[in-house]
Image (cartoon, rainbow, N blue to C red; front, side, top):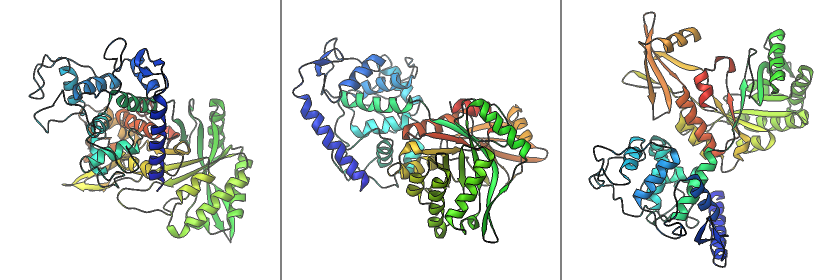
Length: 498
């Protein structure tokens, strides 16, 4: 219902803009045919300034004109910065190697925005709204996810093909409907519509942030972090009385807090607890936690009660609300396991928790499956990140969300987990005999190698995987990334998250 209302309001606003543009005599973006108050004027001006595409002449943009498939492919290459080189062999039968757009078609094909499912490209045909959505989603590297997204609810009744791609493009805020429940997939996209869509994506991908916080159990250089969460407390109910046990050496805790202070980062007490921590009164448990925060000189709390059952959902929400009141002006972050595509359910009342907390931190459930004996255990699978954010961002302000990023690894020998040490992991990465690979399906790296006499498979996030997650959270407008262990992060991973 909320999505339908948002679509209807968007359509009404667009109609108002279109109606208002008829009376505007002034030109915009240097084009005589673009009124200054036209609904796409700003996007047209920015597209021209950024060099993505120009007017049909020096004085006319070609407002209302359809964009061809060849022209859009050239624009797409400019937008993503793909190098275009004249091909020596044609990708499609109807694209001569000396055509002005041939290099762009080849580049788009190489980057996955186009496929060879058909022999002809149809360069002079207008690009349809459906084709535009498919190419954009594929260009972002989300082709594998779109194949899975076709099983999700389709917001438009007139879409019967490429449903996953259009659902993704809609969820990411790149396209909207032509009415409350229609998309008009076969309608040709005009030049100004392409300009608006490109600027939507440009603003998402070039927005400053998201911010970064980290869990840290040892001192380090925390420069650039907004907050550091120190895992130094555990909530318990003993004899019916709530209490917070100290779980770290105080000397180490003090050194971490001092390093955070020097970096200008907020200091959070990472407070965990099992389901029994919710057995006491919300007010009493919140008071015990707030007292620990005050005594330790913290700026707030990161609270986690994992694997919550639906039976405890109300108690968790009550505790968060009580803790929000008890902390006053101090920060309150709440960790929750994200909703999953595979059907796992948790007892978190996400909307209520996000309303009470400063941030709702989402932890993505891992996969543990096997294919012909090979362990498939990607870390923070990108398809699950998309599902979680797509499920929640319609009802929760995405700025209040944070995504937990796993800095460790998932190691297996045969079909059993393997206790790989950090030193062994680094040795495998440095060993030239190690086979390193990247799964486009999960946007996750993995390696195969030998530790002693054991053949191991290790899934982990590298720079490419981190960059894929950064792009996803930027597309959804998520406010922060939370690294689960600052001490073990690799420089490649950090570089990909910047």
